[in-house]
Length: 216
Image 1: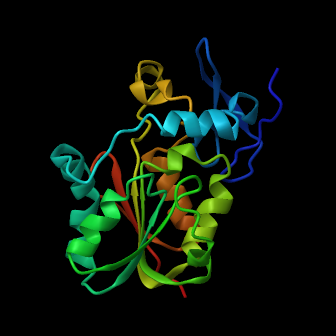
Image 2: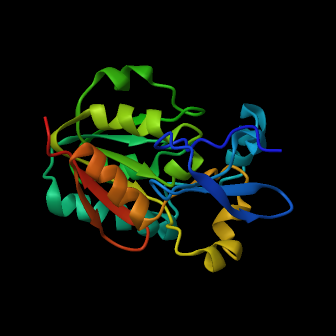
Image 3: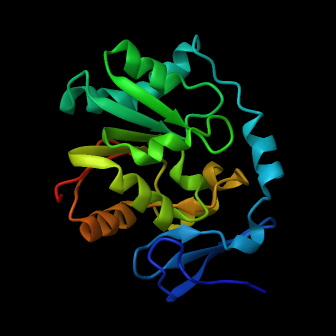
């Protein structure tokens, strides 16, 4: 039995079953279109970190740098160095932060498990990157609001996450096989969230989204 059904992004209670597999159930919110895993199925912190510890990214991995470059490139076009930024959810090896520093930006890092630099939450930034992060957030409303409040006027929240297409594709999607993935966004979800913030929303590619803070 589900222990909660309220949407963790918009707090709406008009949610319905979207998919179920042998591991978890997935609900979809009728208001913001977020697909999410109820907290009953979330991993504990120790199990979650054990999954993250399996990642083997490195500074010298050319393929990984090219992957992150798809998020960095649109920032380079819109924000000039030496602007300040934050790599939120940088992981054990902050490759994206290193790439941005190489390009002349000032970049801080934060990760709940590997770089708990709480001082960053008292700072303001010209951009914040969240690469393959938002799908892990158990409380996306709170975390996104906190990041949004840290942006300067006309600053960018740069997100990389794969997007929900439809129910049929979702059932076969490799993205839901990762037990640490608990929130799944779509174009409709990001468009809804941007409207709530009075933000500009650009879909750069199938998994790169830029949200610009327009209101002070």
